[in-house]
Image (tube, rainbow, N blue to C red; front, top):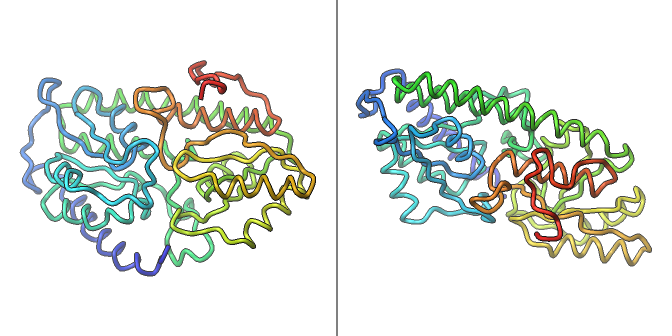
Length: 337
């Protein structure tokens, strides 16, 4: 990714959206009337990625209709908004996005929505700078994949709750109750992930994936993470990168690598072939959800289901212990995937 190109765009976006956020203390400041939305007249919320949309749905409940723009299996790093997406942004009561340049190609559209008076909010706004990872060569930008750490992603609940209350103060009690209930789900998820990840033998705690989306995950659960491509899927893996990773697999006797739902398998297959040529058998441990959740309407199509799927598959593939159907017994059996 041409990271320096994004720096001025990021500065403009942050300034505009910060101004929008400052105005939300008075719901009338951006042209919104202070009205209480009822289940028969829900607010309209647009969220960029599925992980953000899922938090918004859980917190808003029946007081809002949440529309997700970027669908299942679609890479948000590369996504360019369509005309219908822009129309949805401009008609929404509120817009929530991840931030940290995950939706880099949507920058102009988010700025346009903010300039039109829409309430446009980054859900990662409460994450302290010292928490965020700044990968080598990122020139002041941060790794955006914070949802891979459930304890950190729980902070987005507070952002969405507070912005909804500012817009719809009569719904405060419901928003707070919903937020508390969802926070409990994420606490349970984090505890489950911590337990099953700790069951993986230490020497096997190396997570090799298609692109570098799991660094927060690795830091949270004590895994070394190696992505073939960089943080953004716009980067390409070279022959030397593949060779170095083959050496790692052979030397560390890593027995499984993982594909991702939004990234092609070509590089992973090259790794497996390279290790086989060196006499080391490596298998695909399964498909992980990285930049998008599972199919809409499925358990894996929720944030909790997405992370449950990932940690369960990683643990079982790398020699740890986890129930086949995951934390809640809702994962689809692997052979049916």
